Length: 394
Image 1 (cartoon, rainbow, N blue to C red):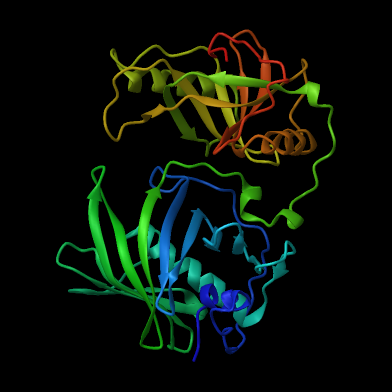
Image 2: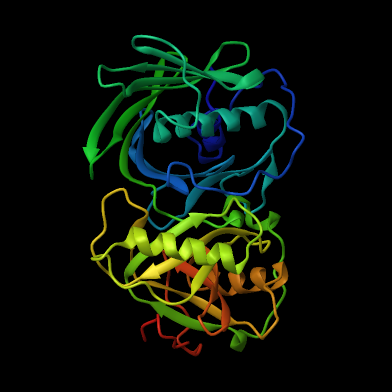
């Protein structure tokens, strides 16, 4: 009996049999993916769910899935045993995929058929969470199909409202790999989301999955989609170089930057567009601007902030919660090189999960790099607190 990768890797838990091999497939040549970018306004697709195995209903598992566009993914399946941390992880970063089996902290690079199985696993979940986007669906009536090239395809059966009630990912030879059936949808916060479904392999139901939450507002750095032992090493920096910061709740306007050059004229044009989109009742536009960067220092988007006010649903301005993180002032003429960014991210990770890097430029030329932290424990209170006009004190 064949099991999908997400189940086969749990063999070390004593629950399942490892997946059987399948034919090798052509490998991708580009190791690193294109820069991360938003798709339909969302940077990521995240889901947390409870998994109940048919073979072990008394031992519920938790599945955490995070996807970023393009070709980034992180899967963590853990057993909720009292006093134990039993989990397996799977990562995708471009054409490279790794697994970290239960009981080890060392990543294993996936190759051949296992690599393709991981891709299909991520593709099936992306099809579910992004429906009907990110794939080119074809078909009529209640049947749809999306090609994955030589690696396989995804088949969907939809209901009268156009939502999939059955999704199946197939290998290049046409055999089924994983199937999600009995998919139930509910309208949550004005958007339809999957709430439960069953996983079927070889005609047998393997587990029932209850979706606990779906989030499209989380931010992740590139390194989140790589195992710890595969990430670039951060140089050691004295902790006093960075400061804590706390930013109040408000509004944000984030615009991806596709045009060049990044000059004062372009920023002035974007600021005017942000002010017009804010409107008369949208709060007060704060001075300065932010440049959202990746860990290599490449600019991804421009960011403006405003005090809390009224915004239109689906508009360019969105509510932003209070934020905290670490800040590193820059000297005149200093640019944030990758070594500096990696060091600051490593420091921020001591107090939570680094979520976004922003190069903030004040109206009088003061510049600093900020690493926002979410899902955090406490940042070290011994670090000094930076106080600027657009920030609140802690």
